[in-house]
Image (cartoon, rainbow, N blue to C red; front, side, top):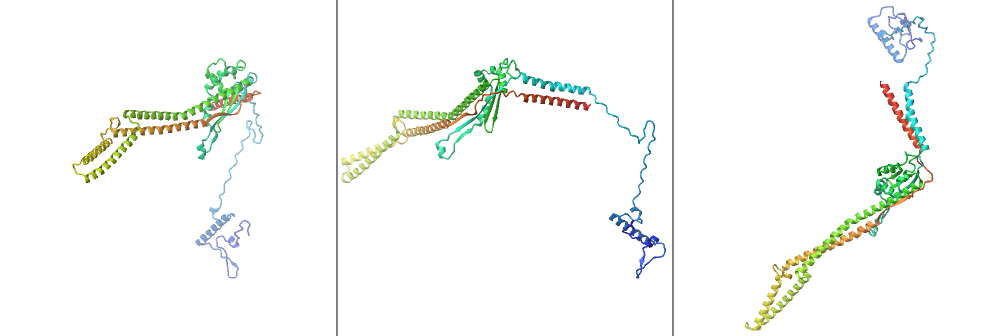
Length: 478
């Protein structure tokens, strides 16, 4: 097999006569070659088709294209570009083969903007930091802290009916709203005025005013607004709304002063909570008292009206009078029945002109007239006690009686509600529970000099850096 075309064996007949088809074999197996004759047009087409298929198979198998492949399967020869001619060396242009060392960079020279940045750093960062450090460590007076921690507690004691009903008692529930009020009260101007009147806060806060004017209170600022503003910087109040705990840290230049101020805050806060409790109790019983007074007034009015009615009609109880009248009618009707029986008996045995018959008849007439007269009292126009209409009198009396009974029931209900409101108000109580009593400091923890100095350095450096970036941003845009 040929090394150049391993997949296509070379045929000596085809190599000798490329214009003829491949050799044919006879029945005995020996190859017989055709004569040198020119190929017909059909044989040329078959030969081109065979070479085209062989070229495609070689390309698909990744083998080299055969030499006898059609021209379109052969790669085009690309002429290599001619290398540029090297320039002739001259005196000004050195030879390309010669080595030219790089020229050394010159030393950086500071410019005016660099000196400006350095001066700005010294003025804006270095000088304030140094001045703050000198003041904090030489002039600033020591401050002592007193810590006070408390919370507002509320106890609601359940009544016996609540316990019988299975309602549990709630002990020690925190008064969240009261704690919010107390937090604002500690920072308020009212508390500052009260404590200043008791302890002279201006004198306590201005002890080192001559040596430490920045951190001390200026005694020349005599307004309550200035004192309140300085109070808020010396009294730190931390309030946890979730648990209702209030922790107060009081700063002063003497430990005794800090503790005295903390104790005064606790006393004033307790008094304020007691006032809130009394106000809540008054609100709880105020409406019950108003209802009780109104019910009492209605009861008095109803009783006075009933008394006036009795005096005008000269009767104490119309119901008893009615019962008496009904008893009289019953007696008359009984006598009438007895007289009718006697009249019937006499009429059977005596004559018509018998005096007994006439007397019995007159007795019946008198009894009937009396019954009719008594019945008229209960009808329209009947004269009752006091000369008035008996039916109207009874109706007015019943109306006044109903008004009195309703007023009595309303008064009883209002009185019971008043007792319940008072009992409920007495069971509800709020008080201030201190979990940290005012402490007495033994060493000064404030001012935190290292922290303050670091904050001054940090913020001045940030300011200088921001201004520097702004300067370079404006410079680059030009």
